[in-house]
Image (cartoon, rainbow, N blue to C red; front, side, top):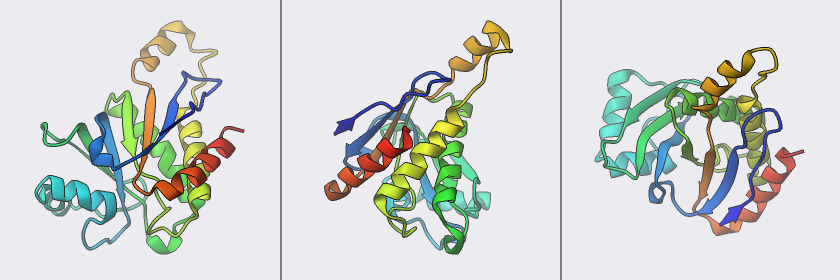
Length: 196
């Protein structure tokens, strides 16, 4: 397990950690998985979550009309069926137009969703490094940049009360779960580039 925090100079520090393992193995406030637009059924980590919930995720996607458009989200509690308190399925948009910029946008959405869900610890995957066709280091760099941009807050003229209220719901820890040990080194390289 690699643990090197990515510290944001203008906000509270957010620790971004790489973990060798599966997303279902980690306890957290919010588990974020993703889905491309018009996906026929949940696949990858999203499929594993669906299987762990006995197909309830597929039913919820159909019932709520989730399409997987970029930034579209479906957040729901797990009621103790998973180690995560809540799960978010985040839309990645069409697979044909998926780029590193899409991953940056996704990183910003993860931070926003974590704030809205009042989650201090989030577990996610490296979007785009599998079915998206993006190299692991490039995907990790883009995600790190998106997380950093999403976490940025400017408090200079808002007074201390605003800053204190906002800090209550800032994301403290983000864990990127990667089941393939051979990809961890490239992912760490990409996250290090996102620090600059």
